[in-house]
Image (cartoon, rainbow, N blue to C red; front, side):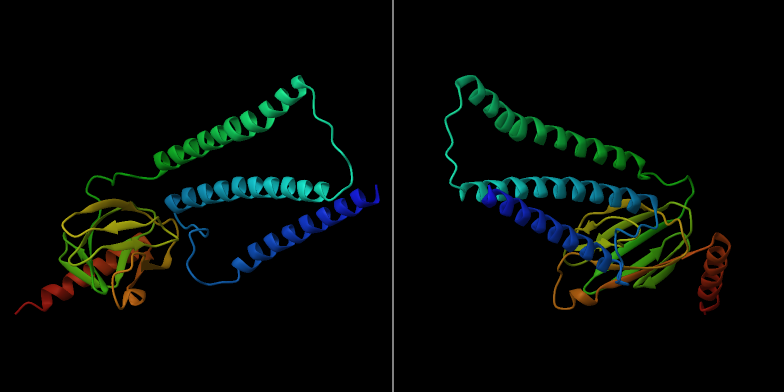
Length: 253
């Protein structure tokens, strides 16, 4: 009896320690200024964050459950109690509970839930721009980003400017190797494959500057291949566009 009490005390202490570790990791993760997909500034990144937290929560529950069962089995094994074989009907019921329920039914329900969340998130992410909307052609080079506004003839290096609250069609391509365009606070990752053009819709709900990074190793200076997405109020963005066009016109001899 004393052994069982001690085992329960140890189990409770371990669970408390694990919970404290999880809370500490969560709190410390908010102390960084690095861009994070868990700090969404657009509808697309918000949907990605919801999926992440759902998978994290389910994964944590499963891990805690398996850990508790393992600890219970380990501590019970060290006791001097003897166990008699279960009757056939109880044995069958136990097998159905742990093998069928825990090994088939529960994983199936979890996977179906994740698929439903994923499909719902994909449907809520904009996939088409407004007629006559802004188009930006982003080309990856070793090791810098080229952003071309084809309607205005404006080219930027390692920077993209867009208006807040408006969907922008971004066309991705690469001139050399595979790159990956990723602005965590605005959207997910998109690969740039040489010879192909990948299109997605980029939209930011709040003005500001959002740092992006090439997320596919592309050579020696891969870590320096960064991009900044500058999100401006619509009036400021139009003023910037006009000033860039005027400057380009004035530079023509």
